[in-house]
Length: 192
Image (cartoon, rainbow, N blue to C red; front, side):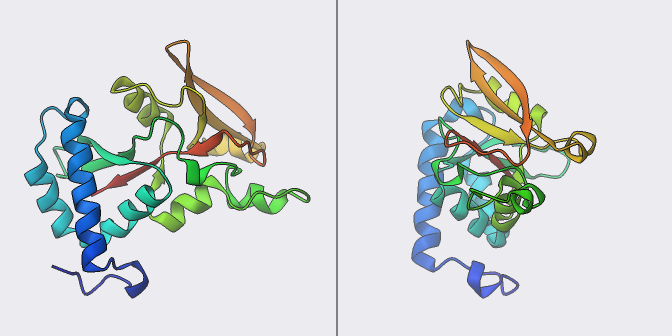
């Protein structure tokens, strides 16, 4: 079933849709400890009822995020998909924090920003709390780091926050928002 309200540029072809659903199902079943109380039939029904979210999931997949269900909001019925790749998604690294930081760089600009890419993909950057919740179901970012949503007061002063996991501990750090590194990207969250 295709939603007539989906922008044509964001509509998946039938074979892309089926391939994505098969990939998500395989990952869901392989990683059952991430969502022990949930079943794929319900998740797929929700995805099929919200076809417009498939493009964002495809973008998460295309950029190396390996999205998977990590939670269910019992009040809204929304499934929360998060990038569950072992390291920060490869196709989203070497980015500064946001479009303002990108614009402020005079030399050696990165190709994009984490906030800009997330908005274009239709996903949210993880908050520190969401990042820590993700780390409770697995060990992620053992060699990389990921930008996380930064409070306005820190961002106004030129900073931005990122997290990683070292020594079996999740760390929160700060950096200038315009900085970028080959080992730092971002993880996205999608509500379906």
